[in-house]
Length: 200
Ligand code: IMP
Image (tube, helix red, strand yellow):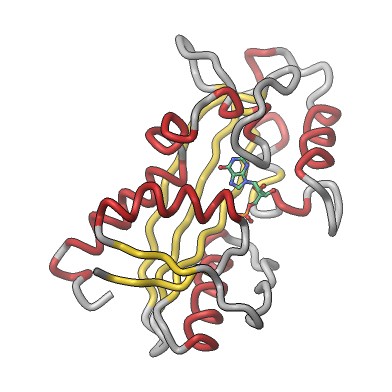
């Protein structure tokens, strides 16, 4: 059984990570009290995830796991992208970010609202070794929020036809089965089982 310390304090994310990784024999402990939230101010998801995982691994003296996710909207030239968490401002809530997205896309027709989520997961050792994996989910931005499940931009992220539901309308199991984070976590499971991942 491998055990990692999570860099995130987001309970939803921790739950999603555990749902996929526990059956693979990977245990994730919550971030120890006293370890701070690590800044996410780099220009790429890879840099942010690596920085978070490395900082926590070194501070905790144990292997750590971190993820960074961006929502990339074609009609907005890829924004909010790596800045998705602070899209509507430094201390923006999920509702603030969703509201800003819908305002920016006002007048953009359904056919031009394509978007994707990308998650990068980093597993870091206190010695500085880092393993990176990623997962992508294609979809589109809805005209209005639907559903109360998940978090973040889930209520406005539409799955492609013929499904057509938002991520907010899925059960946790359904979201994990197809989401960007679920895909990245399964890629991590594969990498940890591969011979080259044995030391990670
Ligand atoms: P981060 O990975 O915590 O930096 O997430 C960046 C932004 O994307 C935050 O506003 C999150 O709420 C949002 N986000 C991350 N993962 C998801 C997801 O699975 N669904 C919807 N929004 C997400």
